[in-house]
Image 1 (tube, rainbow, N blue to C red):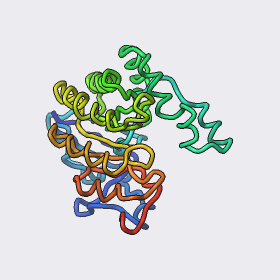
Image 2: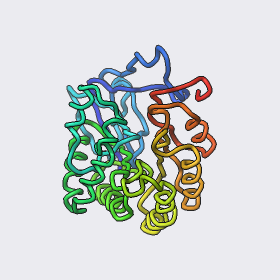
Image 3: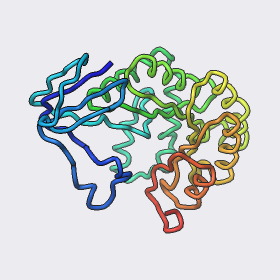
Length: 280
């Protein structure tokens, strides 16, 4: 099936195939073609250029884009869009000077979200989340990675991942699911983090694999959450289930998480608010 857009006022983000990355001053440029056409066949762009070079296709659906822009959709590679309730009060806490760690110590942050989600039904969680997905679609998102991590029990983490799978079945967005059971240590494991990691490895991972619920594995590799040794253990065991890492590192401290991600061939190392020359 071939679709051709014609008379496009501005066709944005056109770059030569030889240009593999964009950096530095090039980031300020938005390449475009005025009065353009674009042809798509079997979900792939097969031709584009100025209308002066357009040759009419036979047996194609023609869409007249007069007066309109055509641009790529956003690809959001790090999201937590499946959650229950909200933590708006914590914005006030941050404005009043509390740190992320202070809020977590008071029972806020991730643990607060997890408690709310654990008490939310799977159907309710889906209804809350699909509305956010619909809004993202309207804002131009076409591909989305969604993480779990606001469950912190086997049942709740599976709930989130099942909702992500259902979202993928009910939207045109390209969806990738990431298992982030190691997002925080639940209160009941506060003095026995090893037991919670055991739960992730011996209970959560096998069930997630059995239901084919995740594409990637993530860990919040950070002091006070999951240290390098913890992260190493989780990522090593995840390889048995063909889950490639996408890990949170260097949000508050730079202590070797980037190197660990590289060692395990992570697809991405995310956050990086703190960065050293060694990390680079």
